[in-house]
Amino acid sequence: MRIIVIGAGEVGYNISDILSKEGSDVVIIDRNEERLKNVSENIDVQTLHGSGSSPEILKKARLDQSDMIVAVTDSDETNIVACLLAAVQSRSILKIARIRNPDLNRDSKIFDKNHLGIDLCINPEREAVANIINLMEYPGASEIIDFAEGRIKLAAFFVDGRCEAVGKELRDVKNVCGTADFLIASITRNTEPIVPTGKTIIRENDYLFVLSESKNVRNILQFFGKDVAPPQRVFIMGGGSTALMLSEILEKKGVLLKIIEKRQDRCDMLASMLDKAVILHGNGTSQDLLKEENIQEADYFIAVTNDEEANILGSLLAKQLGAKKAISLINRVDYTHLVPYVGIDGVMNPRQSTIGKILHFIRKGKILSATPLRDEKAEAVEFIALETSEITNKPLKEIRFPKGAIVGTILRNDEVIIPWGNSVILPGDRVILFALRSAIPQVQKFLTVKLDYFG
Image (tube, rainbow, N blue to C red; front, side, top):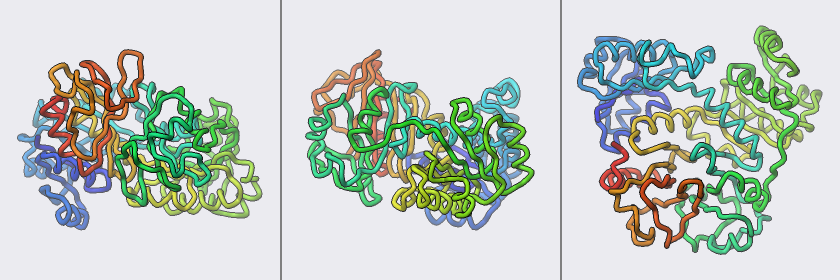
């Protein structure tokens, strides 16, 4: 597959890296020569200096010979124009655009194939808000990821030293827990991901990825010593589009809100659009302001400004002053694994959500979702097992999966199955598989040959 990626920022870089390692012919376009130099030194792709909305540059990129264009620059206009030019020059090319303008509804007919002809539009901020709401439903978790339309959830969290599971092998943890089936599908230990076995011992500060049926998540979190009480009082630092979308949802849930925003005009706008939220003109990193507004009563402090360092600082300060939980919006992948270690409870990464959406669309076929996990070093893939596959109709223990891959969950009709060695995947089952990033090329080859769901 030949793919043109427009934009060499975090999303463009990571998408290009993943696709090139999976055998796609990738060319990446950007106006920033330093970014392109970084790409050339680290990824086996072709680079092209120029604007992705330039017909001449797209011609040089051999648009007419390409299968897909992925426009993920910071400019909505550039992304839209690039896709329009692609539609004019090739009827068969698939077009993906990142569009951040909150005024553009995800269901807007403007962007369907009969109008602008864009095949997939992604709003990272809207995805970030959905992630926050999910986290607040399960406050003991640092990450919550949905599978099977929400029937199955992946909860990620750090293990406290007081937890009963510390020092025990995974195969013994269920006996101690005494709750419904779950699977610890992956462990991040000292920033490195591990695909565990039954003999793996849980250690203090391990970061666990636990799969279970959604109705059991709270009981599992409670066993691991996590809080599951829903929030009543929330502080939001920042008054941008992400804060507004989040506030509108939380108001409907009856949550008491205080929003801190530096810009007076933005404060006025928020006050006019929200019904009950208290709008505070000031700096969310001001200790005096937080104390004055009783931050110690907050169940959550959520920092969603465009300044990642300010988000981290504000969250740390809020926690120090007594806020129960803190979540920071972080776009940089290299920050993500560091933030929880300094005391912040959750991280929203809109770019990671964007990458997952794009991978899902590109791989299509029988794949239902592809979600990069912590630090992009592992991935969770949800797919439909085909009748012609050698993965079906035999015990899992007899199947030679690529090293670094594990089957996490099987959904058969209405039954959620946490698999063991004797479990059998049947044709039509929905399967969630975990794999380390280093194993993805082998997994793809394995599944392409066996399952043919990567297309």
